Image (cartoon, rainbow, N blue to C red; front, top):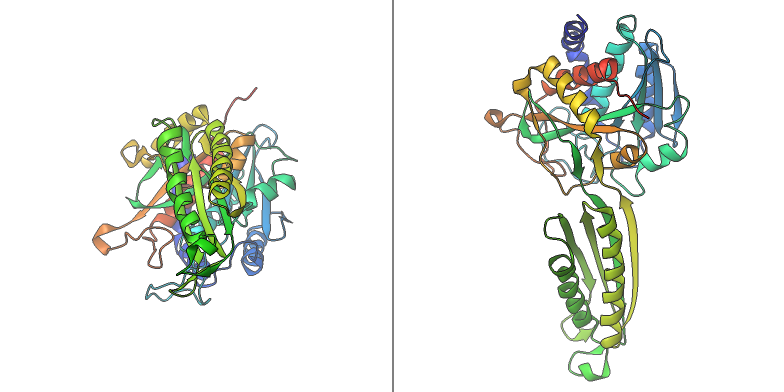
Length: 396
């Protein structure tokens, strides 16, 4: 039975997987700078006898052929970059790169895909079709490594019928996985506002353009875009996350900079909101005598899980894990450039439980204390291999 063979190999490769994960965790690299990580992945694929090519400078794409390789083509994706966060964990595999950390679990994702690749290559006479392995750079930074990989042809020659990706979930106890049909994560855009005017003495504001006051009105006004323009049944978030301006108590600055993020679950509303942001910025600046420069950096689209593929994956996960270990993923306003893939072909992005409350392993992603229960690695390796070997989808 294929499931039992995969479970057996996942357990057999678990120690190696933990060693790989710890190596990656100790040697993180920022987005689009993952050159050592890329070489490490290439070395492992060579060791496993899997042919591969480089894409997008640091991305790696491998191909595993089972029996009747043209009968089905499934892609499995992992992201490989880290974050500019200084790790605070006191562990032997703590980051050795100052100010850089695998705080979002991409070391785990890469390890799981390498393990799945090794399993599938070992069992290539036991399953049919082709599995394309996508080790993708730059998920944490616009424009998103997925968009670059797609532009360079990662979804061509051969074209996958479907794609799977996993992500650690520090809110889900180890041993579980979760799935969600339809929209599962939000789009993410960044905006940058530069307010300029005549600065001057704080005791004579009438001789100046009070850029601080203009910025304050902008912040209040922009918050109302969500509350008074968006359908309340469609999740959306606008947050101002940075205010930079002024340097002392008695000088009105000539410039104030704002930065923020806009998230949405509806693509039509997303771009309508961009227009409202532009209009409000222009109108407030004009009314208050300031100059304004606005840049909206359009980022990742929503992550959408194909409904039929979701049903296939849910059923397969229950068969492999036991249905009691499979749950529904909650809707999230976080973003993932996996959305670029699911725009092009049917996609399924699922969550891997990595928490262990009894051991205190509960810190969230993007925090300096993030870590995982490493018993999740064998589960992730096996699940990715199982999806690669068994998932199929009829597409028109």
